[in-house]
Image (tube, rainbow, N blue to C red; front, side):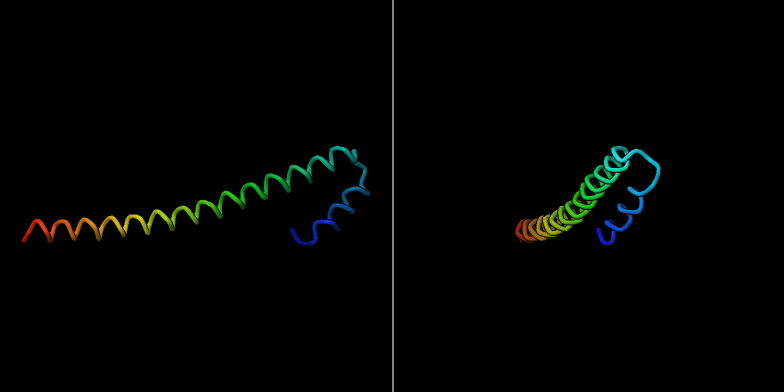
Length: 69
């Protein structure tokens, strides 16, 4: 999201329709932020699932030790 204003100003000076140019940049910002947010959430959820799997593994080991006694 850095320096996009300069690119927007240059494209608004071009020959294309201003509405199309504005719609493109608005869509680009929303879609880009949506993808970035989903990527962050996927990494966060993955780390929580790994911790949960490790906790379940240790509980299973404790149960197996109790059964072995």
